[in-house]
Every structure is written in C-alpha cells, then in structure tokens.
Length: 201
Figure 1 (cartoon, rainbow, N blue to C red):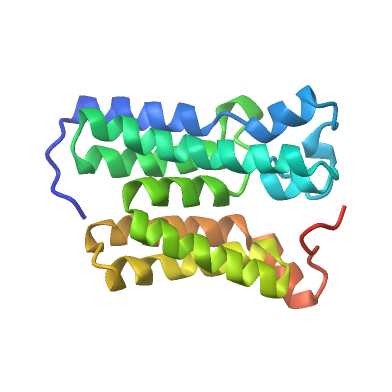
Figure 2: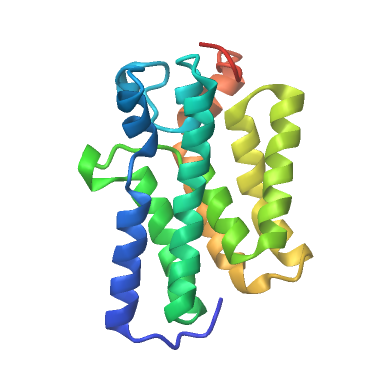
C-alpha cells in the first residue's frame, strides 16, 4: 500500500470524482443512441461491452470497451495530477465501484472488467499489460469472456508482485475479489457448461 499522505477531505473528493466518472453507463448510452435497445433487457442484462456485442453491433461493443476502460484510466490519471498515490488508488477503486454500482441505475451496473483493465494500465502499465494479455489469451482460447475476466483479475495481484509493483497489491487483491463477486452467476454457469460464448447473440 502507498503511504497515507492525503487529507481526509481530499480523499473523499477524489473518491467521489472516481465514483461519478466510473458510474457513467457508456454501454447503455451507446445502445440507446444507436437504437440497439435496452441492454438491461438483452442477453445477460449487463451494461458492459460483452453484452453490447450480443446485439450484433461490433462497433458499439468496441466503443463501450474503450469508453469503460477509458473512464478508469482517466480517474487515475487526473487524480495523479493533483494528489499522491493513496488518493490515486482510492479513486481507481471508486471508479470500479461506480461502474459496478452506479447510483443512476439503482446500483445495478456492469461487472467492471473493462474499467479494471483501463485503470490498471494507467496506475501501473506493466500490470495492466499483463492483465490485458491474460484476458486476450484466455478469451481467444476458450471463448468465454467471464473466464477471461476471472483469470485476468485473479492473476493481477501475482502480476503486481512479479513485476515489482507491490504498492498496488492490496488494490489488485480487492479488485480481484470484487470481480469474482460480480461473476458468481457466471462461475455457476461455467461449472454447469451453460455459459454463453463470446460472439453469440
């Protein structure tokens, strides 16, 4: 963990900034703008890129992936301009929570994978690259987005230690736990063999 040097008021403000930025439901906004329907009534009901892909619109899915990842990265980079690493990590965690539990949608958001990868790339790019590579390899080999997310999230604390980024170990561990919690339904379907593969509408 980084040293706690930022004042309480500033920490609260940066956490609020991260949460509000993370809570922007880009997938839902893009789906409505591009007349793809209400994502909450399509496929898994998730507002993330994987469910956008189930509408058959790859462009919308790619934009959702970039924007959801981008908001995590922006939360980190902007906070880093004005505060120390304790505030940066808190803003990163808050952005992830904002995506998963957005106040605008009754705290029913996405599963946070793109946001996780985006903030990891911004907060410690070697860990971010390793996590992205993990996701891609598992997704290509097994064609399960959820399995790729679980593997990338689960290995991120190990990548943090292995790549000399021990200061973010606690953050990666907390995010990994949250990713697993958000994917409990997917884990059950993976075990039952009923999980939907990538690209299936």
